[in-house]
Image 1: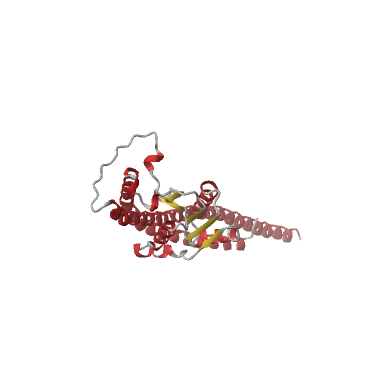
Image 2 (image 1 turned 90 degrees about the horizontal axis):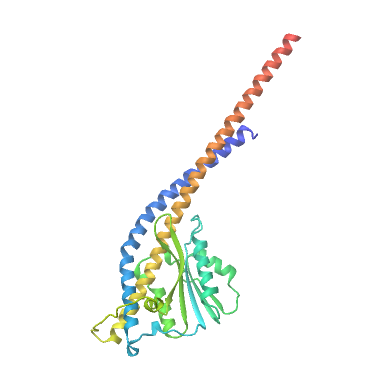
Length: 298
């Protein structure tokens, strides 16, 4: 049985930890609420734009195509990994990293050159530790602090870089690993193909799709030149907002669980403290009674 001083110290330590985790839970809940509102408001717009893009590209004739839906053999690949820069979020960062690694090992097999663009310190630390030094692999950490400022003016720099390099043939395929937000308790880590633009209609060959009869004004070429980059930038922004909301949701859930565990541990420690206290009192009483009996016998 631990002595009273040790148990009291542990109770104090657990109480302090509980206060910290409870405060972090409330902070994450407030941040998640704002982040969830941003992605909830943006997601229908981003999905509609993405649907419009794939619909237009799937219904264009050969003369109206764009460089961003050109499928090439994957020689040079790029994976963008969007994680957080802080921990204490359960398995959030680990799941995103696993999705990125799965994309590299399963979807980008046979590449000769690979660039991993890390947004968030946790992803940068993992790939610097496990992939730096591998043949043909480059780790780009220039944008690892991007999650600190999610304004469109700042975030558009990454998709612009990716699109320029894809158009120039530097990349043949680009995947983005991020966490899709559903609610505070549920986030899905996925790796989604960003370039070339995926034709969802072609992917679902068994389904029937009505061919859209678009009237282009101005011409197809001018419209696509402006429309496609804008839609892709918006889509990338939605990846970042999804991950931001997912991070705060995962951290809120983790801190809530940590607070519950601290409460349970406090109950057990208080029981141990009471047992140790009762044992000490009983020992003292026995010593007094034994001393009194010895005096009487003398």
